[in-house]
Each structure stands twice: as C-alpha cells, then as structure tokens.
Image (cartoon, rainbow, N blue to C red; front, side, top):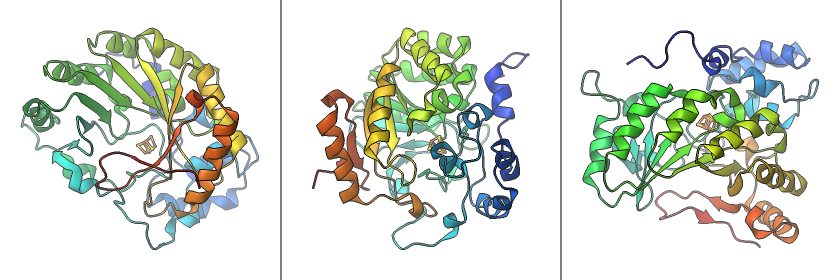
Length: 337
Ligand code: SF4
C-alpha cells in the first residue's frame, strides 16, 4: 500500500531535508568547522539527523546550546565507560514476538519503525537491533506476529506504538496498524510515544489529524521534550490540534547533563508544556547506554532538583522522577534524599 498520494505532504519533504552532515549543522549555526571531524567520527556510531525547523530554534554561535547538545555527535561518545552497555534495559529479555516488547503488566509495546526525524545522542535504542525484529518478507506484514500475540493475550489492555518514532510512518500505514489494533476486543487504549510533534511539528497535518479522529479508542500521546526552547509557536499549534482531535497529551523528558539539569530550566519546561496543553509525566534519569556517559546525572543531584521543583510548583506540574530498572514491574521512582 502506498503511504501517501503525490504530491508528498510537507512533513515528508521536511523529513527528506533533515541535516545529516556535521559540517552543514555547524555552518547553519555559525560554529567553527573545526568541530566537524570529531562529530563525523562519532556519527559513525549513530548517524547525525536533525530537522531544519529544530535547528532554527538553536542559538547561533553557541556550541553549548541545549538543543544542539542533544543532536551533535561528540568525541565523548567514543569513550568506553564501565556500567554503560548496548542494551542497558535488557530489552532483549522483554521480546514477546517480532517487534513486540512487554515489560509491564497490561500493556505491550510495538516497535513500529526504526525511523526517527531526529537522532537524539542519548537515545537508549541507539543500538537497538531493529533488523533482528523484522518479520520475513511475504509473511503477511511487519506486525503480523505481534498483533497475533496481542490478540492471544486478553490481559493486554493497552498497546504502545513506539520505535523509532511511530509518526515516521505515513498515514495509510498508521491507519492499517491502528485498525488492526482496534479490532482486538480487549484493547482499550492506544498510546503513541513520539517526539515528532516537538522536533517536526509539520507532521501534525490534516492527514494525521484525520487518522487520529478515526480511532475509536482513547488515544494518549506521550511527547518527548527536554528543554523549554523546544516549544515554539508551531509546536504549540501542533499540540492544540492533537488535543482538538481528541488526544490526551503527556510529556516525558530525560534529565541530561548540560541540557536541562537545573531547576529553573525544568520549572520553565513544566510551565511551557502546561501552556501548550501538555502535562509533565515522567522525568527519566538517562539510561546507561554505551556512548552516553557524558549526559549522566547522579541520583542525589536528580533528587535535589526534584525537591526544588516540588517546593516551587503545584503537584500536577512536577513530573515523576524515575529510572528504568530491567525486570522491575514498573518504572522505579527516585526518591528525595
Ligand atoms: S526520537 Fe526517541 S527513539 Fe528517536 S532517537 Fe530520539 S529518543 Fe531515540
């Protein structure tokens, strides 16, 4: 099935025009070209990928810009640090079927695609073996076994579309997938884990909203914004459109050293998210994936930041500070010291 009729929608053109060469990113931000060789080396481990509209929200001439730090490959990524590994969450053990993971009771997570609009340097799936998840061609589609496994297990009330970013799929593929999920009688909710309304708000277009309105189950979008500078007018409009089409909007952020590990930034993030109609849900300690140690924030420091948020924000604007522990029955709260 073709994803989109000709001509391509704007978001697909934006996807095709993402920046993938460090020298182009540095030039766009008036940063020294001398940073490019180290970035090119680190990008061999996990390619650079960033939409132009996201780059437009970065400060020019500032190599420490908090949005840039999330996407620019750094020499630090090549350091081998004890305790940081390819699969720190042991997701291999959570595999129920090709493209289906189950970590917690009552919900299962569908790997819909490996594609993202942006490559976040701290991503816990930067080494995820997507190709090993694949179904064999000609066996009835990428999600056949996963959907069959969900249908067989009536304890699964919620299906989480994840990836990669599920909104990298075209509207026709999304419709095909959610039609199949909605047809499973015991599924009561669909959750969409996506960073695209933040990094590529053009994705929230008439086609996507029509898909969303057509789903006859409650849909929760868990967005992923880490810094208040990520929320601009176009993102606010995208969020408003998603809400108007019936989605509940939550946000999960990752606590990242040098990006958002200070109380003022986190407070402002909660506030601008709320203004955009999004409730702060989780603040994750970064997963200890290889190549990301330079983002790590120690637990006692994270707990201090949480205490500061609790002392200055209403409870509904304080995200739950958590760490993911392999094999645990839920996310593990990080309590205050
Ligand atoms: S959008 Fe999500 S899945 Fe994609 S690179 Fe970023 S954190 Fe990873």
